[in-house]
Length: 229
Length: 350
Image 1 (cartoon, one colour):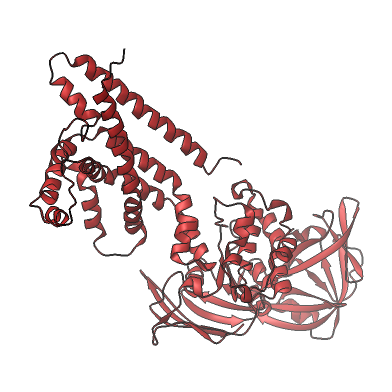
Image 2: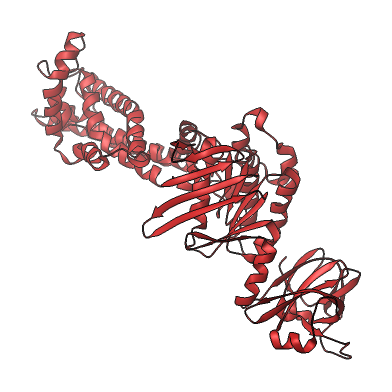
């Protein structure tokens, strides 16, 4: 029933790779941002919060276009990177970047909820017992936010698997290079007689997403604080 | 301990303005809820910052607004036991206990885990997850965790308030054992007069954010006799009970006290000064089960009531009578007098 061409396998592999890399790369930044928003006393938190959440409400195409302006040959960051011989636009790295930006708010929101749920008294207790802030971070805050990090990472991974709008603008739709599953499906639906092929990739997409959800559920159960040893 | 406090802190409509110096090793901060007790505890531990003032502990400045000194909590070596245990839920009991110990430089460690585990009776709990502990066990672990950091001062912020009555008095012996065995100076925040009497040597009374008195727990209990309904609370630690006719007879000071609510083993009872009747001569046959010959050794007056300090052998009891009754009985230091208590007047605390 599944009819997959070598190009499809490449798309599946690329999608997975992009989602994994985007999620892993975003995690430390997402965690730091959530920590900043919850625990620090910096001014303008509302503004930072708004900025972080902007990709959530902007059309992905707009995000992609803004990234293109920033990272294109004539963009200020793009020209800088160009001088160092780094090219991002229309490579798989651009797909990663698109996924990172679009999925970032989901990751931060989830971690933030987890951090806000940690009892402040636990942090006070650890400090009065002689733990510096970084000690408290690694021994109390991070272990207690494992569930929310996992939930955020799952959301971000799933969002990355489905990323289309920003990716097609900044990474293009180059088979074997930047063509992820959604882009390949888009291609098939525009090709006469491509329906069956599109359906096959849709099924792959459903199976992949479902597997991620199941994995997430299983891990969350393992992390549950109420579980007896 | 040498603790000098002079602090100002504004929180909304409430202003805390506290100045005191204490040299006692077991200090109580006493006051009603809303008097600023907890705020003071947090200020001393460094968990909130004062607006101005100074905190000096054993010659070291922990906070001084003039010199812009403000030691963070992790460098004050003041451990805190909160009302709720706040154990780290992702660690077992052992890791909770050792959290502060592992963060204390070896040369500053004064208390070894082995000794503490024995005193607090935690041996069987070490590998348990903290979520599987009962309320009393959690509070014992929290106490142990704080003490193992070898703090210069142990602040206990209403450590018993979340426990039910019976459990509360089961924990108190552990708390007293800590200060006796390990010589850790303690600062106990509480609104319970009994806790002040059992666990402190000096009490600082807070009222609406200011120090209204600095006194001994005994003196405070006597003052309160005048205006609380409960009167002065005599605390009696009794042992060796024998059950007879539905009552329990406890050994006390060469004689035996008959008490209604007894049980096996050692127990702590409270007896209100109001529940002690005084007779000048032997009253003959009476229904009350306890009749003790005593000697009045002192009197004090509070709001029209007279407190009579009675010496029964080596023990002391405080009874209270109205001013007129004291006059009629001719109570003055040195006279022989009979104290009568019903078996039901004793209330068992644990």
